[in-house]
Amino acid sequence: MSTQADHREILLVTKGHPFEREPFFSIFDAMEGVGWTHVEQPAAQALFSVEAAAPFDAFVLYDMPGIVFHPDRPPDFPAPDALYCERFLELLEAGHGFVFLHHAIAGWPAWDTYADIIGGRFLYLPAPLRGQQRQDSGYRHDVTHEIRVVAEHPVTSGVPERFTLTDELYLYEVFEGDVEPLLVSSHDFVQENFYSAARVVKERRMFSNEGWQHQPGSNLIGWTRTHGNSRIVYLQCGDGPVAYADDNFRRLIRNAVFWVSDR
Image 1: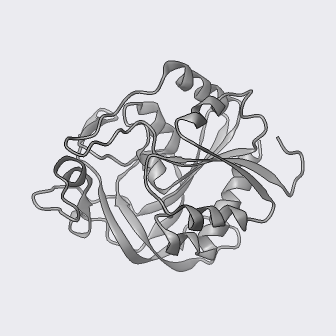
Image 2: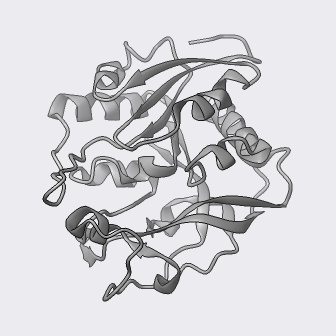
Image 3: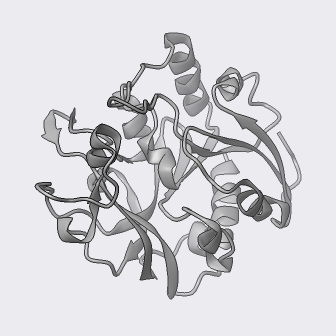
């Protein structure tokens, strides 16, 4: 782990969801005071231990493990290996920092603790969550919406109180009682403004909400929490090149990296 107050080394983890690589990686190429190493899933899982993670100040996760998509049937949700889970939890007890971006909130649907770590979940299919049956989540691309900062916090330092971003939004599950809100969206998080994720993965029907019922959802799109001794940040922003290039989004990521790294 770096001992320089003005420098951080991060492990950047991807795979499981398509993205435009060069524009995404340019975020970190341009990030002052941050060095980065990129490893894809599932190889990255070998680095989820106290010993293997030691060279890194924080992990930035833009991945979606634990989901196997198929062209002709619904996805499978394999559970993570027990040893991986054990070592991940040891990392959290050791105070290692994590920044989760955008679709990372859908990862490991067969491991309930993963949703607890992040503070919410995007559901590709209806499923029980915290003892209640939940509908599949919603998505909507290219939404131009106003983001409002709702907390003075190191993660939001230097970010204007209000700014506009065009990005994908989720109608998803947020454990509002377990997180410290940072960012809210002006968008109306109701079923009419989103499309069903299950329609895509079960029926190959993009941009459909026909017959889909979903309760109104949270407008929280950024938060912090702690799990064990670790600082956690989730930022829902980050679907594509327009968001990647946004200075405010880039500042939020950098701030998050530095904040979760302080142990």
